[in-house]
Structures are given as C-alpha cells and as structure tokens.
Image 1 (spheres, rainbow, N blue to C red):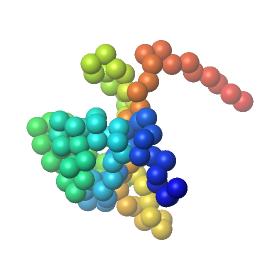
Image 2 (cartoon, rainbow, N blue to C red):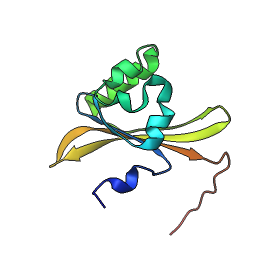
Image 3 (cartoon, rainbow, N blue to C red):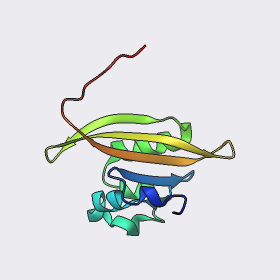
Image 4 (spheres, one colour):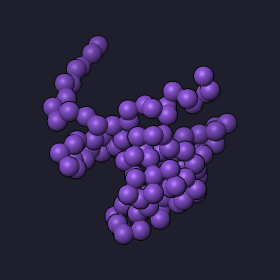
Length: 115
C-alpha cells in the first residue's frame, strides 16, 4: 500500500492546496463533491478560481492563506449536513498550505464530556 492509498476511497472529501492556494491533491469523494466545478481537473487550479463567483468565500480563502488560521463550520445543502474543517498543513515545520475535510454528519450528533 502506498503512503496515501488509504485516503483515495475515504468517505469524506479531502482536498489539499499548497501555500499559494493551488490544489495539489484530492480524493475520490472530493472529486465527486466538486464534479460540477471539474472534479479531478481542479488539481492545478487556484482555490480563488473555485470561488470566483462567491466574494465571501473568496475573501475567506485569501484570509486563511495569509493568516494560516484554521476555519471550521457546518453547512446544510440538499438535505445533507456537513462539517467543513480547513486547517493549515506544514512540511519540515514550514507552512505548506491547507487541507479541507468535508464530512457528512447526522443532524443530531451526540456530545460527550470526558475526564
């Protein structure tokens, strides 16, 4: 098994961009999720271009790329609730870009406090 083989069919969308916002990796779920935008053809494209018609999203991408801060939120679309987790990744201790995880979640999620 190659180093990243497990993620290809992982049931959450995983998209990775470099420090300039260029998409460098996607798994099958991400390609399917962004099929209307080009799917796997988005690899090599800039995240800004993916949000060209959405000023708020474009501004958020720009902010994340400049501040290197994570962004976490939930959305509902087409009767499906998702958690979006966007976090910087690092290579040899230096900022290298962002990873976006898009996970389908139930509308009601148990919450546990553990000691």
